[in-house]
Length: 339
Image 1 (cartoon, rainbow, N blue to C red):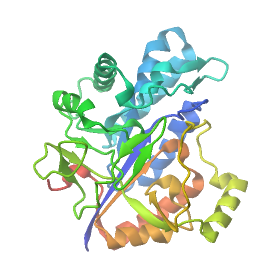
Image 2 (image 1 turned 90 degrees about the horizontal axis):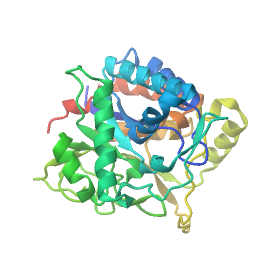
Image 3 (image 1 turned 120 degrees about the vertical axis):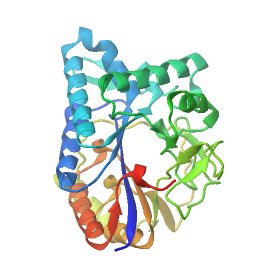
């Protein structure tokens, strides 16, 4: 059987807008459902933990029992994930610095997005939030020699300019990044990145030094996120989405509100769009596209969010995994790629 590389990565985070949503519905329960699906398979996922949120909980847990309970629920699940062989790496959304707690809902308001990107922070802020984030993760797994922080994903994919991260990657031994969306560009009040010079590579990774652009002599490794070319506004997708919207099966587990983008550029719709490979995008109408992608490519990188996943997504994810493992020899562990 031909060997294929499937990389399953998850941004373990709450919603980043006016309502963060609850820890149980947006993190704990969907992640547990996911673990049930992959428990019988030799799968190593990567969970990128929103450390700025963890820091906020850690700072306030002493004075609030609800926050303390949320923090402990997350810590327990992270330890379970690590015990099951999954990777736990940092992911930082800096605008948690301005989050306001709603004690009636036990949720957070993150409408202040002035510091959404890492680049917007002052140098002293960058140093503090990065070092305290990694220190907190190391503290959680204190004494575990098998725990190492070797990878990173930037909040909102905002890994540029990379000179913001270079000294921290070097200092803390991080050599792998998972933030790049090849060919994508965003210039809004929240997301800012330009990966237009990054093309799909025949290998499941590439080396880089500056701005995450390909450099065969680079010191770091990039694992680009995969995209599917999908015909825009397909009738089958519109009909299915309407049905899923009207039924609970298509409702995501999370109960929060996402970040609002103020100056998003609306352009003329193209015939085809590039859509990230993710569990929340995996519907019955797109399942065959996902199967064809892994059939035609040796590398497939999913970026998913537990908060966005629905029962319908999980049902199709099970079908996709069944197809993949029955037809190919699958490597789910990024550490087993040959560098």
